[in-house]
Image 1 (cartoon, rainbow, N blue to C red):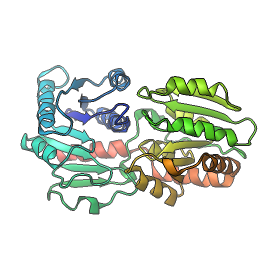
Image 2: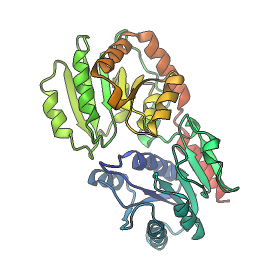
Image 3: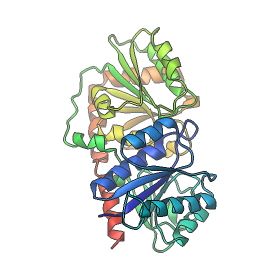
Image 4: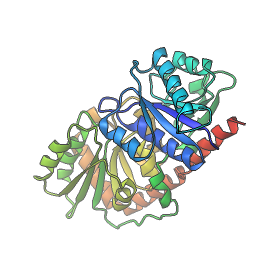
Length: 355
């Protein structure tokens, strides 16, 4: 496969980093399959831009308002520039759009230019879909979300298509050891976390009565609260390490006994690593994910962050740390749910559409 994948996604402190990071996983999978990938971004934080550069993916800056027809036109133009540049001699067969502002008019503009299009979606946000593929990697994905679509639009639904970054693939055959009593907690609440939910969780864990508690807090480069968290961590009764843009997330997930996270893309990484999780809902689209993770026995749904008390966070965390049987069940359920081969399946489906 020699075709180019041009990914249209944004990420910063306001939007979050999830759209760009799961598209990075797809770009890596596309490259493993022999293709080439690049990004087109209208809003992106310096940290995310640096990450794409480090991964070797070119990035084009757009000036249009995200989601507009002008945005679509600039995205198409970026693809044309890449076709005639050094990145690829092949036509730009595919554009990938990940964001809740890529509506029906945006999709029509891409298709009218003769491009193949894959849209990443979480809950059926557009009134109509005319993409070649719609990818919804969530447990709650349902064809009923997409009844208003073109006859040619194909659906890739569920955790079979979960996109994991390349660094997780070396853990495909790993087996998690389960401690009789867990004492290691990983807090990962998104790359931006503008409301500093992380600080609330860190404070709540002071109520945990286990001796020897160790906590690692992961924040993204888009977080405005890194220094605040570092300062607060020096005055706590347990050991806390704050890590910015952790380069070794699989290792940190393997180290931990329990994670506290949000109902976003990181949930699938935690499931793949067999790490029992407590999930907080930070946005509307995360509610169905959190519910389905609990139904599958992979995580405990703590509910909406604004309605969850520090007492509940502490008590639920300590209960799970003390219950090795429950942690083992949750770990096994997670490993069965996400097998790590989603990016390969998506790339294969898209490549088949090129023939």
